[in-house]
Image 1 (cartoon, rainbow, N blue to C red):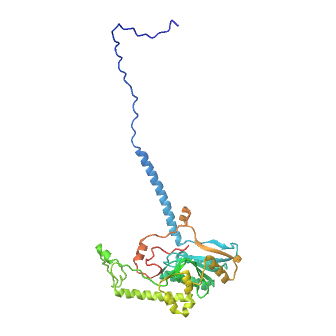
Image 2 (cartoon, helix red, strand yellow):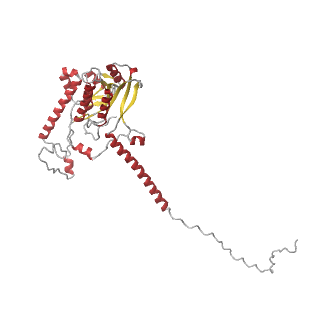
Image 3 (cartoon, rainbow, N blue to C red):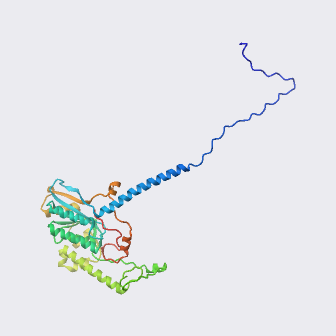
Length: 371
């Protein structure tokens, strides 16, 4: 053993009977606890502000798209979409679309007619197929569309064939009469509802409801008839007679237009009177009653247009006129219809007494739309 090495001292033995003193208690030294952190409010607020900024940015993009779509709809150009037969053919047959409730004859429907007129002047367009899916609408709008189509046919001497979709009723049927005397030119699908020849002025008497709310009409007008048709009071017999005369006159106009497009009813006016009750008919019923010519689909109507134009399927490129996509269409990748949902204009339109060629008891809350 190394003599320089130190040996730890050994405890000395105690005398007999003497106890060794107890060792002092050992005090545990604990490490200090980490400081308690509060809730990360700063991070939460920053996250919320970031989310709000992102939401605001997205909202502005959508708003710009909607605004651009609404503004562009008034001047939206017409594009062509090839749908059948020979895309390389020099001769063209155009499918014009009338869809939705009719409020006026302007908008995209009018631009489709203008495009058809231009194509006919260039010598490209040989026939027109009018595709209708509409419950009708206002008298003025329906008559304007009818007038524009009749004018187009007269100016271009193009054959016109009608293809009815799910519904071509009331004002929609009215516009279909633009085919004139040409036989075999109105086609309806098997599931089509059509007819509804009649006129309606929607009116609602809410006077008792308003009285329960303590609301009374107190309008100031130049004459007692100025506020006729108000829903805030009961309609007088004088007002009802005036409205009925307006309805009767519009009804006679409707039947006159039907006779112009359905020559058989010119020979038998009573037959039309029996049908002109506002009733909606199925396609098979309408065919048996003489309201349409054939039950068939769009391609059947196109075949008839080809026949009237003196062409063959190999010589024809059939296209459908459609609106130019809006910014919203491009952003969402869908066909966005930019109709105002509910505005002061539509609310005032509901409150205005107006006669409709419309297959419903509710006035329209949206403008016409054609695609």
